[in-house]
Length: 328
Image 1 (cartoon, rainbow, N blue to C red):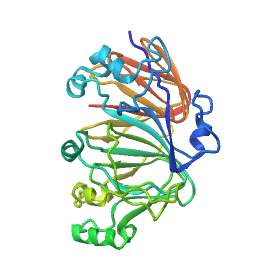
Image 2: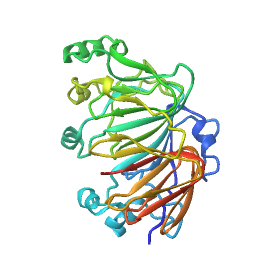
Image 3: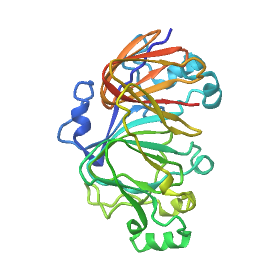
Image 4: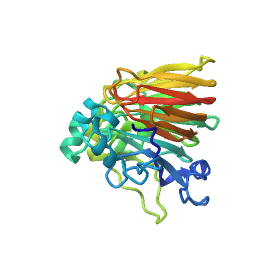
């Protein structure tokens, strides 16, 4: 019987990163310098070159693709294995944005397959923490913007004037389908759930330069055909409000993932009978002991654990808030 599986974080230095991830991962065994800027911690990944490695139990030292190949439907779900093979369908990250990220867009499945032999990238953000007045950008202010207006703004470096700027608070949730222009702002920490893809078209980078004094590469020509100019940014933002008790509330449901916010006051049992899918729990706040028939594992803020599809139920102990993620 498989057990709740935890993975070693893959932490990434980023020009826009901060120091929160180094502090949060201090006890994880990751060798992080308090002087470096870390922007991303990949908690669960099957991206080529960045495949997660198991950190606990008898599978310790094996990578995610290896254990999917061996345990197939028992681990990820029968239909999911038929669809994705040994490639795990989701990428789970924790992001610390000390500075604003580039304005970017991701291609959909069709365009990504045609250009990159890859899946597209639909994603979501859950705002874990933020500084007062912190904001991000999702979509355009004008839902009827034309392709020509966009191209002119890029040429004149006035693109930010067209973007829909939203001040955020903890508990804000954003759904970012492939094709929606977006950028995370300074002073924000988020949990990101996305398709397994690392294809990003950078459109505007705030006239920033890297450590060598060079601007980062832009992909403006590639981005034009990837943008969904019909997307309505007003439909992509919601705020999670705690009910004050234990339970789960679904916040995102799409073709690629389903996400609920789960609150636990002391103990909560989640029935998984009839769900032909793995489940990933990501800790937003507090600590949680997560147990299935095969064993248990503890997670804290920013950490994730993978529950195999063969598990019939999950028992969560602790005082915590979690994201619960599976593929419907």
